[in-house]
Image 1 (spheres, rainbow, N blue to C red):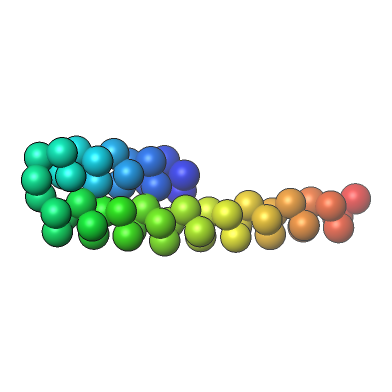
Image 2 (image 1 turned 180 degrees about the horizontal axis):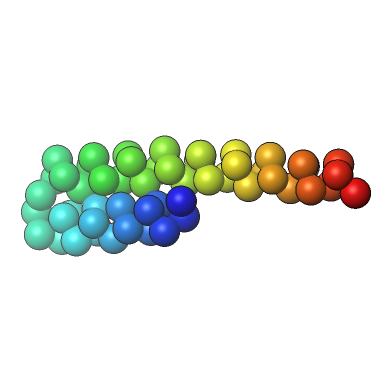
Amino acid sequence: MLRWTITFVIIAIIAGILGFGGIAGASAGIAKILFFIFIVLFVLSLVKGLLSK
């Protein structure tokens, strides 16, 4: 999931440089959502790993 976040950030940067504001904004929004989902899943994984020991 982190790869998808990085992919959308790169798309947002390239679209922003080329002047496509709408696409850049949408890609940045998607990247932000995916990043927060990744963080939540990562924390849940850590908690599950700590509780299973």
